[in-house]
Image (tube, rainbow, N blue to C red):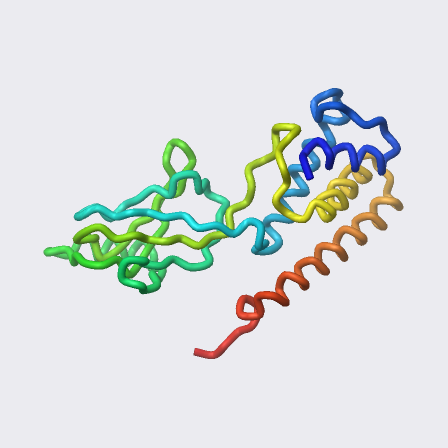
Length: 213
């Protein structure tokens, strides 16, 4: 469902006239803002299947810092794999990396560890890897990457749109100051959120079950 369609669904539930564009008037623009508020909350609540994607980085000899282009800063890591050598990379903190990179001679080889280290001027996350690559390796980052804020009428929402409508409606009712209605709608939204998370969690039990090492 598109951004405009969601805004109009919410407007109908509020008994307001529908619009031809999200920015048509001040109230439809407000509802559009609330759509993005609810969208961010829903995206942060669970690792939704529709938001999962893979980023790749190709190393070069003697270069340990790489930019995850297009990743931004809101993504969540599921796993990082050295695809060339078929091994998982493990996180290490900044101090560990500093000590390792200060060693003389510095260790070189196939990357086994990673540390996110800063953001570019374009807003993309940078990552350090170690050992310092001694050749070309393909690194695969399986991540959950939230969708950018919706701005165009025709943009299609990636998360469950029915849930987004309910979450936006709860915020719109609260904005109007309708306390009683807001409590009911907020409960409806929270129950739907919990139900959809439970459905998705059931398809990925390995992500919600703790196994002793």
